[in-house]
Structures are given as structure tokens and as C-alpha cells.
Image 1: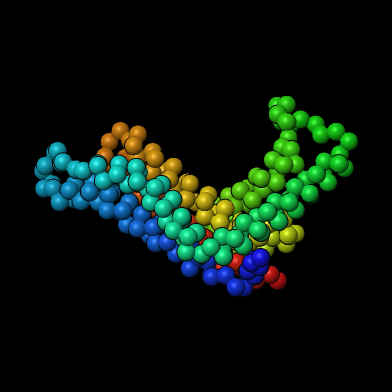
Image 2: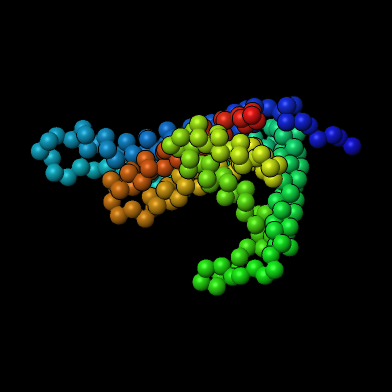
Amino acid sequence: MTATPNRLDLPARRRRHARLIAALTTLIGACAEAAGAVYEPIAAAPPDQESVEVAILPCIQVSLTAATLLDRAHAEDDARWPAAVAWEREEARRTYAARWAVAEAQELTEEARPPGKHSVPLPTAQQFAALASASAGDEIAMLWLNDPEEAVVLLRELVASGELTADEVLDEAVDSAVLTGLLALEAVRTSADPSTAAERCLSAVPHIALAIALASADPPESK
């Protein structure tokens, strides 16, 4: 039986996610190039020219291919680091079990769980355990965009109980940032005019850059 590796035996996150980081970097360049196909002809046109022909197809192509590009890169990273994948899965099982145990204990201390707002049932212990890591990732992603140092402080607090690992939260934060960027790119295909398509293409860039920062960030040392 092969022993599960210790976190210290695993690659730094920027190596563990190297293919994804490279693909995200490529995607930023593609967004800029696609937007340039709209803006550059306008900039090059004579001041008295009223109608300028631009190319919107590159924006649409970026929108259509981005998710596949990132999915392929993610799979390549997993294939390169099987030991890291095994460790992540083992840790995910452990932390999920810990979150579920806490949620179940909380349920047992309540005589009756009232329904949520507008009579919507509150999450079950199992649902809570599944949602907690994603929620933590969303929170870290939003905070990291404006204040990375404060995000690190929050990350330490989130993992202090042992119900989450820093890698787990950071990976969820990467997914959150990537999803936001992909949603911006998806909106390109419904844009009414080339300028709007270019703007939406560029609006994805900050979220993609955030995903790179989160994928490159090593877990903070506990204090």
C-alpha cells in the first residue's frame, strides 16, 4: 500500500497548477488580441471616415474555446502530479467528514430547525458539508482581489478548525475566479455590437489574472 504523501513532499502550487496558469496567461493574451481586432482598425481609420470595418469573430472564438482550453490544462496538471491529486482527494475526504460531523452536532443541539427565510428549508448537514468549501473559496476570491493580505488572514482563520485546508480553499477560490471570467466571456456571444463584445472580452481579464494569483499562491504558514 502506497502511503499518502505529506504536504511538504508536494510541489509548490505554481508548479502543481503550471499548465492551468500557462493557459490562463494565454487566455489573457487572446482576450487582448481579440479586443484589438475591434479597436485597432478604429484607431487606424482616418478621422473623417464614418464607417470602419472591424473583426468581431476573434472575440467570439475566445468565448467559445476558453472553457475547453482551461479544462484541458487542468487535466494535464492532474496527470503530471498524481501524488498531489491523491493527497488532495484524501484531504478532501477528511475535511468533508469533519464539516459533516460539525453540522450534524449542530443539528443535534437544536430541538427543531425552523425553515429558512420565506419557508425555504435550511441546508442539511450533508449539504452544508458540500457547500462550505465553495463558499469559503468565493469569499477568499472576492477579498483577494482588493486586499490579498487580509485574504491571507481570513484564510488562516478558515483553516484553523481543521474543517478546511488552505489548498482546498485556494483551489475553490481559483474555480470561483475562473467561473466569473468565463461568464464574462460567455456574454460576448450575446453582444449586440463589436465594441460591446470587445469590452466584455476585456472585462474577463481581471478575473483571469486573479485566478493566476490564487493558483500561484502557496498556503500561508499558520501563526
